[in-house]
Length: 378
Image (cartoon, rainbow, N blue to C red; front, side):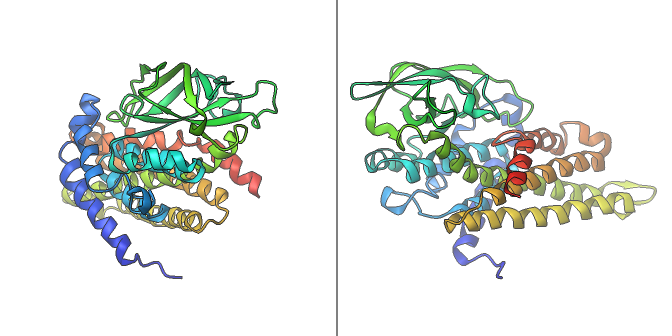
């Protein structure tokens, strides 16, 4: 077993780290405070080639895989998870889904624009009444001449207002078998009947837009249907495996931020005549944070390695998501505790990391859903 990153992976890591420290680090706190979408930061990410990292070369991307994206996302999320989730959803839920399940016609039409950032991709699965139980969705797709008409409301859509292309799931046969009657469609922002609904005011990731998306009688041409019109739930679950690697990598980035900030503070802050890091109560927290980070990174990289090779990896993706998100939240809690009262203020970044960490246990499948997936595989 070789745990060394190859030269290409090291280049991705170094490039992402330079971008994150130069572009994201100076503005992350201000963007969080203003709840402002980081347009310029996402634009620079596109110019650096990050948005097209997993898009095949024939469509204008770099043609790299889940391991490369996990490495990139850890670096980006170290400084700004709002940008990190924008890139993750774009790559793992939009680009990868289209590349695997889309027709050649839609690949040629959309992937080059997604690779350059001309279009930002979004993913529309969850509804107000269908969260973890996605199979109970109410959005409907009705067959018409030349295509389909989609009606429904989707909720918790990352980058809803900024996206130009949406992967949307809807029921194609109301009388069909539950879960086996769903289609996966590509809907453009410019299509008539597409509207942005309520924007959520969130605890964390405040620079990432999260909104409802409303589709009213939207005509979608036949070629924009991915799959056979009834296997959409299968497409969704397969796509979420890749998405869980992305969010697990996000958790690694936040976790690392908590560790690095805590090590720094524990060296600078003195009590009883010595740095607080010299006290066992603090030192052991740091040791646990570092050990958890290393272990979780191995789980994330293993899941990415398996998916890049086309091997079954649903259990491993859920394990990576479960462990990384739990570890991230424990690290965030300990980071605030190590900082004491200072950690409860906005003067230090661990307050923001604490808020950002919480969502990693909720979206892309909540912690309990990951345990359900893993236990079923056992």
